[in-house]
Image (cartoon, rainbow, N blue to C red):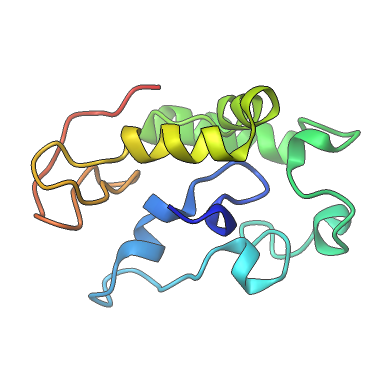
Amino acid sequence: MKAELIAPCGMNCNVCRAVLDKSGKAKQCPGCRPRGKGCVYYGGMCAKLRDGTVRFCNVCDDFPCAKLKRLDKRYRTSYDYSFLDALAFISKNGIKAHLANEKKLWKCPDCGGKVCIHTRICYGCQKGTKSNKR
């Protein structure tokens, strides 16, 4: 797992369908940080992310903003993943511990490949897995 693929919002882009999918089915995305625009999801609308004032949303004075709350609610409901929980873990334990935790969480039990957060399908062996709980 690459640290630069942990987005400012806490999303683990290492296991995002748009980063993993090389088949052309999903729009290819290099992740927020590699794009250098702060936040791909909000199209650079957050000035603090865009100008580099904050590295992660949880260090912002406006945390959690209404947009992040909406995004977190959508991902909790649709994908059983919380950006706010991820950011809390990073705050408490650091990015290295977060990466280690995420690596275990999204590792395919059959082949060791990466399981997609959106589809719960391993991009190594193409098998589906059960929901990964924090």
